[in-house]
Length: 243
Image 1 (cartoon, rainbow, N blue to C red):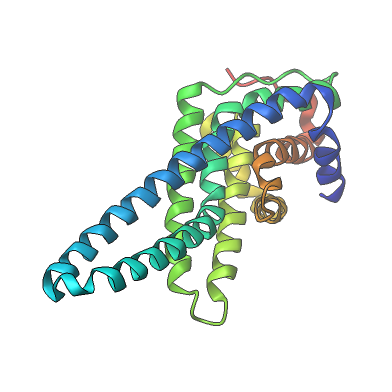
Image 2 (cartoon, helix red, strand yellow):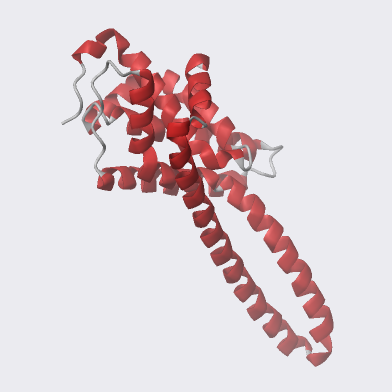
C-alpha cells in the first residue's frame, strides 16, 4: 500500500500528468469559487433582511450599531465559509475526478503497466453519475459531522473516517470499472473492502491538506489504479478490458 502511494505521488508531477494536474486543479478552484461566492451572497442577503427588520423594529437610532454588528458578522461569515469550503473539498474533488478519472488512469496504466491490456474508458454519464452521488454523500457527511463538533472533536473523526470510506469507494470503482462491469466492480470492492478503506485513509489524509488537496483526483485515481492492479494480479492475464 505504501509503495502504491509512493508511486502515485512520484507520478503526479511527471510531464504526462502536468496538463491533467492543471486542468483538474483549475476546475476545482472554479467550483470552489462559485460555491463560495454563491453561499456568501446568500448569507449576506439573509443577514441584510434581518438587519432591515431589526432597524424597523428598534427604530432609526439603531442603524449605526446594527451596521457595525452586520459588518462583524460578514467577516465571521467569510471566515466560516473558508473553513466550510475546506470541509467540502472531498465533494468538489469527487466531481472533478468524475471528469478526469479516465485520463489519469490511462496515464498510470501506460506508464506502469505497459504490458497489460489497457482499460476501457468509463462512459462519461456513468462517471458523472457516480461522482455526483459521492459528492452528495460527502455533503451529507459534512452536515452530519457538524452535529458532533461540540462532542470533544468527534465531528472531525466522523468526517475523516467517512471521507476515507467514500473517497476509497469512488476512486477504486473508477479505476476498476475500466476493466470490469459495474456489478463486478462493486463486488470486487466489497470483497477487498479492508484494503480499499486503508487506501481511502491515505486519500482522506491527502484531501485534508489545504492547497495540496486540489490535486486529490490525481493522487486518488493513481493510487487506486495501483491497488486494483495488485488485487487482480494473480489473474491479471485473464482480465480483459470491460465491454
